[in-house]
Length: 287
Image (cartoon, rainbow, N blue to C red):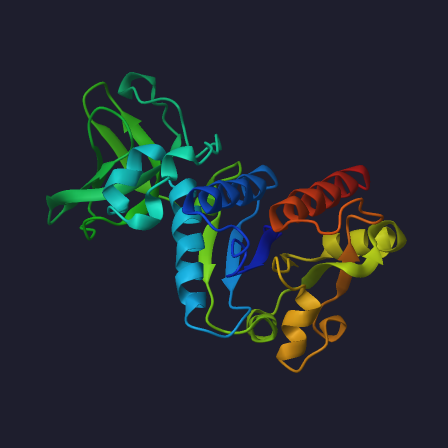
């Protein structure tokens, strides 16, 4: 049985309502936390408004989300100094399984998965930084330097740690999210990616309670699910209307996960937590 993949789509302008980089960073930190808490596999950032500023906004969101998802021991090797990371220190820790607190080689266990970055080696072997006192060894592999990889510990004899390349899906627990910046409009992304189930969140959608039964059945049957969110200044309906499309024709469900809201607006990061929490608990109850 194929592993179910959960993707979320957020607009490039998701932090456009926040003027200062510090507050933008904090908001993106909440988005990353929501994604990790609810085991999101992929965050898609899509253009939602015309103008060159979209690239700048998308790059900021992508950089901070990627930085947050990267284990702390690899960040200095994988990220250069950048104005976008000026306030990265306020990003919250993810505390996911691929962000281990153990930094001591003596506590490594055979079969343990780690994220790593490749270091200079020889023609027949590669050294990798796995976040302990000394590099680990991948035998019979000559990999390019500076590449992030997932590895599995296969030998630890008290002197040398040997690891092998692994697919992140091999890890028996949640292993973080990937970040994708799309240049295509939302409607094209749906057509190109072919999700089994596409869900749009909107205050104008059906209250979740009204469609919960059908929703749960469709979710259970799907292997590749997308949940999409609107922008601070416009909902998904308005975004796709400018593309000449209707939201209800593009997705399987348009859902209101915060019916009877007591505020004029629900912020993007708030919608993420509310929606993913509801989907998570209802799906657990329906098992």
